[in-house]
Image 1: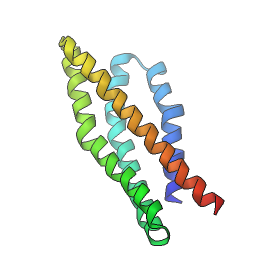
Image 2: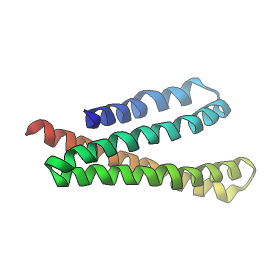
Image 3: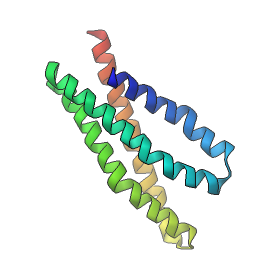
Image 4: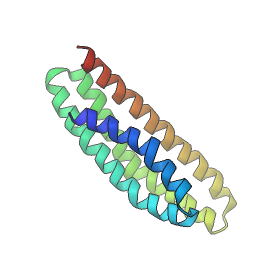
Length: 131
């Protein structure tokens, strides 16, 4: 159940929430709002992936390991990468041009990691559904 909630939440955020935030809100408001949303989104991912890891760890250690990696990677995203992204964005907005390229690179990294996590979670969900 936790895995299905994780996958559904990730898809909802990527397909509905993020586009709505950036198309319906002014850029400054969207930036402040997204900074409030991401820590909660990542906490949601950590909890659901960790619960899935524990549950799957009992029946299929490999699936449990995949979910544990997703949870740990999300801790890194939330506690490490996200603050670095925010610092770069703040520096860019304050006029540091070099911070803009670093912001873009770190943001791209976060997107790639998140997409990889979603693909892995869908893979686990598919495997469970087919067995």
